[in-house]
Image (cartoon, rainbow, N blue to C red; front, side, top):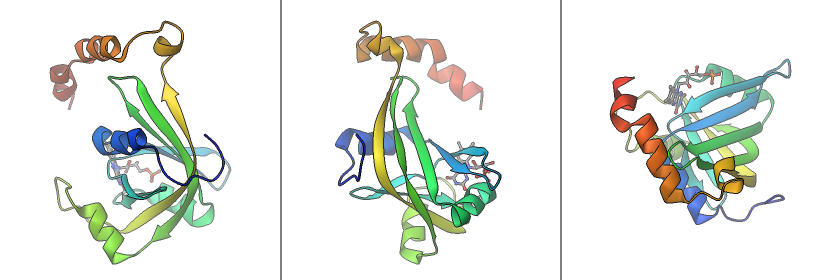
Length: 156
Ligand SMILES: Cc1cc2nc3c(=O)[nH]c(=O)nc-3n(C[C@H](O)[C@H](O)[C@H](O)COP(=O)(O)O)c2cc1C
């Protein structure tokens, strides 16, 4: 899907809510990429996302100068996800900051919010589906066994 986006597909919204981790790419002043994880990404509108700036000086500095942003959300067990491309603005809106703080495990100090207007969304899909025709059930079982919830949590 390309071009202006009216509404995020339900599956993409669900994946953002369920996955709990997003990888956010911005552009450094020298043109190099900056990529860092954000656990606070939320859907805040039909085609709008936001995350909290808790400890992201590089990302927020970049967005203040260049609004270009791309976000990956990936379910590591299903080997599927989405990439969201858009423009971001830095916001101090207290209502948005409060919304981003809701449901967090700790009372993190939120310095600002980044609001993303999504312009394009593309699915991320492992070649295991496209080349080998695997089913979601097979892929999920394989990766749950391979990564293992217990081993993942033991790794911290
Ligand atoms: C799992 C995970 C989730 C994180 N979530 C957030 C977040 O939602 N907001 C934030 O500001 N920092 C978050 N961080 C911390 C930043 O990713 C980290 O400080 C990073 O180095 C910031 O880089 P930047 O300044 O280039 O954005 C998270 C880190 C991890 C490992």
